[in-house]
Length: 124
Image 1 (cartoon, one colour):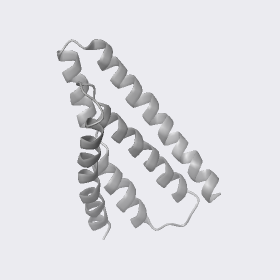
Image 2 (cartoon, one colour):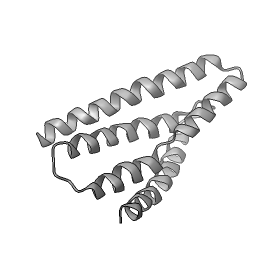
Image 3 (tube, one colour):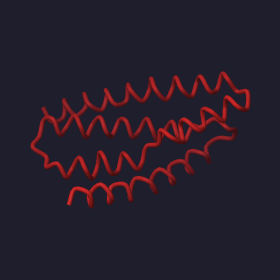
């Protein structure tokens, strides 16, 4: 059953990632990967909330399998982040590559921590 929940969550997360990336891409021109940043930061925030909440509640393991492992795993994308950073470096856009890494890591970690604390405030 857990495997099915992970697959269901991923089946929802991956197309959500694609749709959000297309939407964010419509906001701007250029090669900077804002879509991937928005996706990974929002996914980090959501995962922080999910895991923060599950430490305080008696949620069944299936909730984390569906929403955390499945949806967030299918939604966020470290491989695309890595590829886009390499592409920026290959294009000689070193400043943008560094900015991509810095924003993605610093803001992603801060979002996960914020999500954790939000969950602690709501479910405590």
